[in-house]
Image (tube, rainbow, N blue to C red):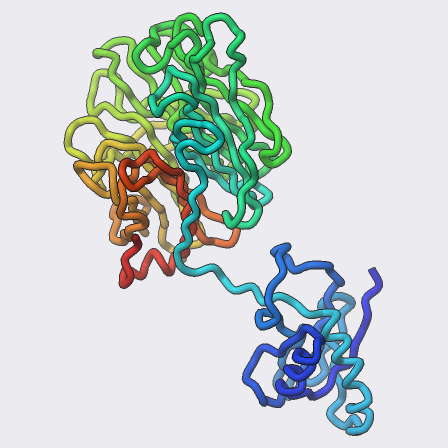
Length: 490
């Protein structure tokens, strides 16, 4: 593209405002009436703002910048993105002659001043009965390599009950930070004509984005032949136990593959069941994909334990970590979420069933000699943040302050009821949680967190007026909103 070089002059803000009123479609951002020497920034021509959305004229600004200090009077003219400047001694008549040209140039190079998102916005993504589906449950949420929001959830067609049942997994996409969403896209849906699978579904999705390849993955539990939480047993075959399946997308969530069964890779034959923790998985800084998971022991009264599965080859093969709580010991834990800490540890937050009504936490450390996940170990389990025994959301926030390890956590902040969806912030890698803010005071249950491309945070959660499974709500909030507790949310 050939770059045009324009020479600029002294103009006043009032002059630019008059041009905007006359239909030039531009306005000078700054104090009205102020006179300033300005340079025209030469930008590559584009047909729309970066957001892809039109903005009102008041949000547009001239592609001008104030002239630098006198010590910087003669900056070099660069091929792209540089500046051209008119000498101060230019005759005034020549300056006036150039004004229409300047106005035309300004109109051609008007730019959008992107205002950072601030506050809290909420949108109901799905409601009971939409598209003939009885209930939408079990939210998962992630941000793709392209910056697209990917939301996944159960389609519970006939009732709100858990697996086994007539359940499928669907997704929706948003390319504008959750302002608008695509129609539903089926992700996992087993053919009901297969003998033994009619009415027995696949659900409890967990979504993970590979930010290096762009591939998206969704994990689900396939309950072939009614084999789910209460009816699965030892073994690896669909006729014996629930199946750990994946679907992948290589086009940013527009289409999804047929199910990929990884049960034999991640489940020990003696376990009664093995499947993903609902919500989202993560990618470690070295590219490893991590999906939280849970299994029911083959002994110890089929006690449930949380762990994770991981892939070091971008999803081609998978293997399992040891459980966060060894078999034969308590507490019983399920439905975990994970984040990578600043020091490389993997923090796990687990639904805790020991009666104390707090989340269970542990950190997985790599093998000290090899630096590999194989051979790594867990720290002793700790307990923090009141919780009514429910799935919850967890996300690291890498844009936090230098020297601090920011982690976000979401859950219904109550010991007794699933209500009051709340977001918490830790600045020390999950050891303490000094900041909390209410998002929704109504009944609420499962949730999932992701950090958006612009640094704001997305939260997908279950809520309702009478019970927590009436809606799936998408909330977007900024960190300044989270830290300002002066105005309670409703």
